[in-house]
Amino acid sequence: MATGYGVPLEKGEHRFGSSMVVVETAGDGLVRYMREVDGGGRVELLFDGSVDLLPVPMYPIFKPLYVTRFILLQIEPRIVVSPGSERTFYTLIPVDTAIYAFPGDEPTIVDVIPMDDKPSLVLYGPPESGVVARLAICRVSPRPLEPSLGRALARIVVKNISGAPVTLSRILLDSAPLKLYFERGTWRAYTQELAVEVERYRGVVMYRQPFMEGTVPISDPPEVRPPRFFQRTDMMWGV
Image (tube, rainbow, N blue to C red; front, side):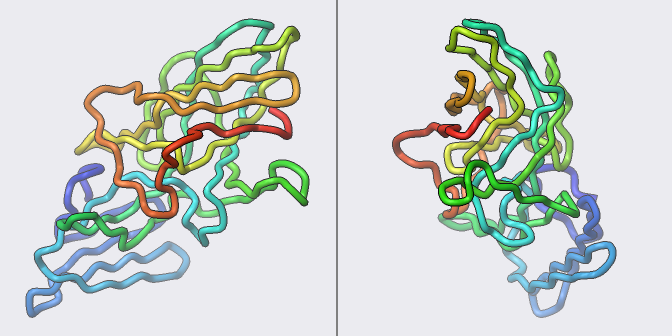
């Protein structure tokens, strides 16, 4: 069994959710990587024996197809924030598992293992101008939760900048400025701190620094390389 994020997969069987990964010698200096999904489906690749295959957490946007970089967190229970108040809470957001091939100047993603068997897409906003997002139903807690394979811990600071109470039921995240971090040799993954300023009908998500020390950032794939400017997400169609 794989021992954690950032640790090369040894030859043998490795269970990732509903997928079984097998790494074995294929002869002539080659290594075979096979992933079988419970209920059907198979991925098979051959690698030069000098390549290391490392599991890392990945944004849950690439499976079954990459159609959006946005993730909509549906908050349960909803949070009512009083005027001028600031509250911190924690939640676990879904993450998939990517297999990176090393070494090299830049790691290459050779497989993404979905940790959710039935991912859902939703529309945030009106059909003509809204965005499609991966739906994630997330329970919140005033105290840190324990991350595990398939779930990354996020710390979210919510501030009500309006003059009336605001009910927060959802948060829209953009995988480009969002960052994932992990503790090598464990299945613990984290985001950076997320600051959410809300008014009655809209909000802004800002992406701050990591809140856990001793973690390693993932190498972002090209589809979600962070922008150099405007690392924020505007929620124009309700919070």
